[in-house]
Image (cartoon, rainbow, N blue to C red; front, side, top):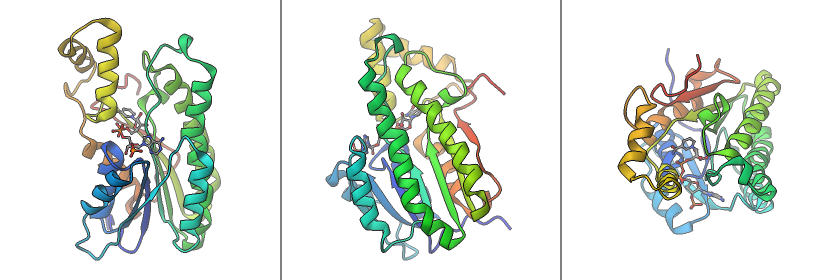
Length: 262
Ligand SMILES: NC(=O)c1ccc[n+]([C@@H]2O[C@H](COP(=O)([O-])OP(=O)(O)OC[C@H]3O[C@@H](n4cnc5c(N)ncnc54)[C@H](OP(=O)(O)O)[C@@H]3O)[C@@H](O)[C@H]2O)c1
């Protein structure tokens, strides 16, 4: 039987005050899980928590942490997991700034590596013991289609995403015997604050109009539209569910068909 029920499970969802992270929290909460949101802005976290479905008795909360400060992330989350086993981890954060790779300063790579790979690793290590004890764990990493085909003008991001995908595949192989899966969701161009920033960056770098930049991006998408955060979240929630127990170590594009590889 298809089981999407997450009743009794606790999900830790990072970068979840808006965009793909918040939509993921909404989807996972609607399947019955207790959600713990993490981001930097406490007021936005409170608001996001208040919007989650609690109709099945779910209890939602939040933690404040900045992923550019891995030690802070570690301190905040290790205090939480002492008393709260986590069954689902969604690794997500703000994306690195756009720009040609040849112009990137070495520090930009180091910062992006910390914010993405190191924080993912810290969170995974903190929740794995609880997942092992429960015999159930789901780690879903929000990355980018650039792990299949690098995207123009996203040099630092392309580089770091590849590292996260390799980390995830290695984790997936090690954790599978414990009932824990590790998968990556690769969003295409999705209508969030991040996409707006990327479009504005292209407008200011090229001098093209907003319409021209959007038109050029849409031309590359067979579906001829941007994705909705809810459409990315649907895949994340499925991968978090019992139904996805035999899906492991994958990188799944949710991009309206944009990625040009098979
Ligand atoms: N949207 C797209 O088209 C697209 C495509 C491919 C990949 N992606 C990737 O998917 C991920 C999510 O994208 P999105 O579009 O949903 O982004 P978004 O709308 O900009 O949301 C980012 C979320 O992450 C949190 N965040 C940002 N920096 C953080 C930090 N240093 N520490 C803790 N939390 C932080 C933000 O909350 P606070 O500000 O409160 O911290 C916010 O909740 C990013 O890695 C992005 O690059 C997006």
